[in-house]
Amino acid sequence: MLERLTQNNGSAVIVYRLRATCEQKRIILDKVYQINMEGSAYNLLGLVVKHSYQPNIMFCSQFVYTMLKTAYLNYFDMYATHVKPTDFVELDYYRKLEFAYEINFNEASSSREGM
Image 1 (cartoon, one colour):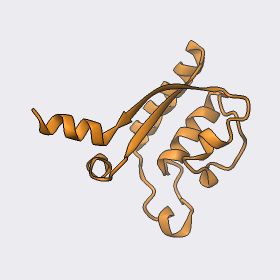
Image 2 (cartoon, rainbow, N blue to C red):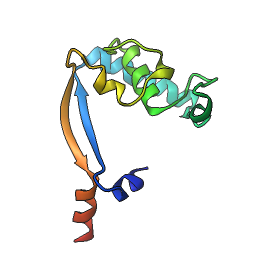
Image 3 (spheres, rainbow, N blue to C red):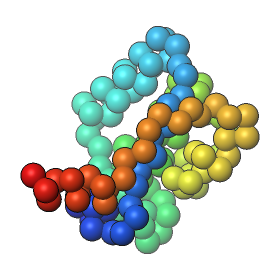
């Protein structure tokens, strides 16, 4: 997927951070560990039917929202299966997210070509 981003003109990823306590971070890490032990997968079927029949098969946005909700860090309320990537920024009414940095893939690609 990153390879495709580097080929698209003007592609970029914006990274945000969300303040969390040590306990909230621990809750998320424990949940990720549990999911890794049980097994997980990307929700390919969800691209067609927008539903998953197993709890550990999710889209990236579903996974992020589920982790935030598990640690009581979700700042909007929605079914995880309905969350879109843009919701994290568009529904941040109370400005919980902090801009961290931006990765521009065209600049990264062009600087690698000169090496």
